[in-house]
Image (cartoon, rainbow, N blue to C red):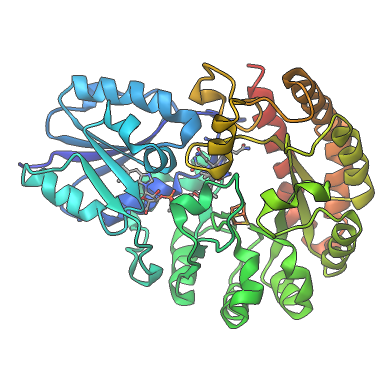
Length: 445
Ligand code: B12
Ligand code: SF4
């Protein structure tokens, strides 16, 4: 069959915030860049505006990427596209975790990564032998990935349409936290992109700020320090303003790398402390032991190197009681974080934690997938009622995301940089907290 075009769709969640959508559609940018040049490819991000289904027909291959919270919207989009005769392929986290459910309404389901399967899918569609399911759980090396193509860069226009571009440097995490879905889609083998490929991509996209999609970039300070050093040295030479990444506490053991990180304009580490209650440590896969004295010391060390810390906390673990909210708020203020994310423990499909809750009959009935946004309560906690968890969480959000708290943290973060950098760092000093405040507000929409 002669393919007229390929359309890659991201279902809406937040829409535009002050004119732009939050993060660039990096997953779709990567997939679109793999499409052979002679086939037209378009990225439709529903966060930017309504989708024009009249442009779909029986010679359009449609690909939808979805996490759990947007899967019902993905299904509605698939229904519209199929009504116009298009063949619909669905991939991403949710399709990977629950492929049989998605197969009930999609023509093709993609499980795992598509670095090996996506080209095959396109070829099979053209040859009219496309299969109902493609699986890739082999964690391909990242060295031979197709670079983000110029036609994709022009079409997406990240600078005009998105607040924060994304970038992938490493992929995977060897830990195995019981609530984590990330490792179930990107694997427990840590993989690395060649440094020159990363530099080339940043230069061609002309990005000066970015958020790394890497699940645990900082663990590589221990696993692969030479690689991390070469990444920092290469990025130091680029005209970057600031970039941020997710990590665990281990980075504090490597002062030389922290200095190089600052010189490479890495300015914020997002650290999943998850809980200040040491009794929850089993659920945290060994990455943090919930010892507040240790956490404070480590955050001070990172601050001493001129770097900022965004603390990530999760509520509703089995050892959490109603006291956890006030205790954590006190801890957050004392520790002087530069940004804070507070979320409700969410039993995503495919996690050991969800299995345990199902076996114990603790999952709440009839919760729609759109509530899997980490701000809704989905299960009965062990030592609180559902209402106590909800109310305690709401109370904490009002403290953490009050304008006063956000300004205090932002000004403090800005103060960690030399005055000459104030302009370049102003946006990133406040944007994280403002983004979290907006995400929390969505629950009440
Ligand atoms: C970057 C990121 C974000 C960014 C951008 C999200 C976006 N919409 O693009 C931001 C910061 C905005 C974000 C926000 C949230 N995120 Co997020 N995010 C990620 C992260 C770290 C990386 C995703 C990524 O871009 N990877 C790089 C690309 C290249 O790889 P990929 O997406 O895996 O895609 C590959 C395959 O999956 C497959 N594929 C994917 N889609 C498709 C489609 C087709 C057609 C095909 C063929 C293949 C295919 O092929 C790709 C290439 O191999 C993941 C963690 C992870 N490792 O997946 C969490 C993750 C996806 N996020 C998650 C969550 C929960 C959220 C939030 C709800 C968190 C919150 N508390 O606010 C919000 C929701 C916001 C929204 N929907 O807009 C969860 C989702 C869990 C689930 N089961 O749904 C994850 C898995 C992290 C976790 N906690 O475990 N997120
Ligand atoms: S350390 Fe982070 S990415 Fe790794 S398994 Fe735990 S939650 Fe997932």
